[in-house]
Length: 115
Length: 115
Image (cartoon, rainbow over all chains, first blue to last red; front, side, top):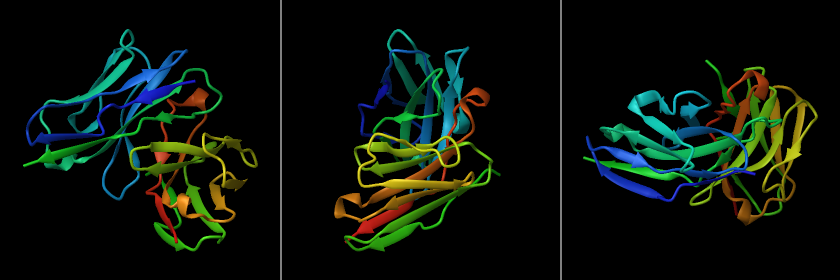
């Protein structure tokens, strides 16, 4: 079984500052990792994903994440945030080789960008 | 554009009522999912389906049932709504694991209030 931990429930940051949203996972098998974003009153949309290959993954809207197998982490970063990045961010994991695409989500981190 | 459509964005029901939440996808996906989203708890899987007429329990199936009579439609049923089922419900779909990266496509959510 897999689990995901997002330790920060809320991250306040000023516009144009860098940000890191933390995600740690637990799994007995190799995993696929995802970050989803949810803007107010909307569903979730995929930000980026790690399937294999390079451990540095680039996504939409200038976000990137690095897979660190030894630390079982997949932290999300952006060098300079905008007001429009204010949203809730969810990290998710799926075990490789599973029969279905059942994703396990973290509890989410609210990114609050202030002017 | 891929699309997952949830029939109702906002519903208000009374305790004991039977509630149907409908979800339709136009991507010919095999897998469909119902998640429940609550503040501080993230997304929790209620039920999922990997084929027509097939269903599997997720992590919190109690008080819910599902129906998948056609490939494109997946319904969530609350047989007798209770106040603790007040929540945001998110439907998602994805193609088969072997042929995809496991990305889920989400609807915009149905916010249910049970009085």
